[in-house]
Length: 353
Image (cartoon, rainbow, N blue to C red; front, side, top):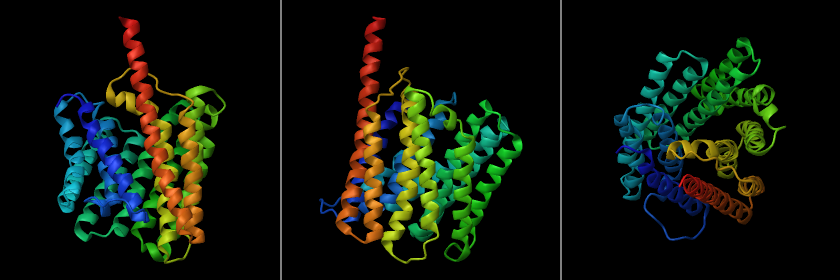
């Protein structure tokens, strides 16, 4: 396999099955499919995990390293066959491969953001191993939180090289990330969650002060689009911190916590970066930003607020509607983005001819 584009069908199937299984788990009476109980692992590992690993390997001039995302991507096949432990093992191999890649980059380029990316990959590996050993999502999910938080913040930290941000401020951010990880290591239901919550608020505050998005939001087009989505995502970090501190055994509050982070924060980041990342993965030299992408982002935000309102008010109907619109907005965003990429690539090819 010479081209990462051949892995895209696995990514798309993972997205569709992940969203579909999530709707079933919310109570929508759709036909059952095998693997619907593995919504979390599919979205985190099979979909986002594969996408992130592909993003890393395309920068390396070694076709054999594509074996790592290939193995990770095949987890969706075994989820669909209901061999979930086999899928967990494949996700562990993928996370171990990602950790090895980041170790290589850290040794070669000793920069702050690479150390954070390595730590994030190790958190993903830890979460996947815990899931295999315990088959308890509640024990794995906080490690997945750490993976996405460290990965996203590291990428934003890398861009501060173009800004007058001192090393002391960068080290302060790294300390805050370390505090978050300490919070998930300590007894989480006792005081660990408060430690993590405090660090999340502080990290969000740091990003809203020093991220390049603060300057880019004043520009037009793609710059403003990316910056605005990033800043909204940072607000969802604060919302996540709030739900961390709520003392409740309610599954609905737990749902609000999970999706404030994974949909509010993580998918805001994905929507912001996808017009840059996806063409790079596909090796297409096009700029797919289009104002229509704002539509799906707006629907995502409003439907997430609706979903969380349903969680807090214990209104199942509102929660289900919000969740359904979450899935629709995510799916439509990627359809819209891919359509723009293909149309502009065709136009570019016709101009060259």
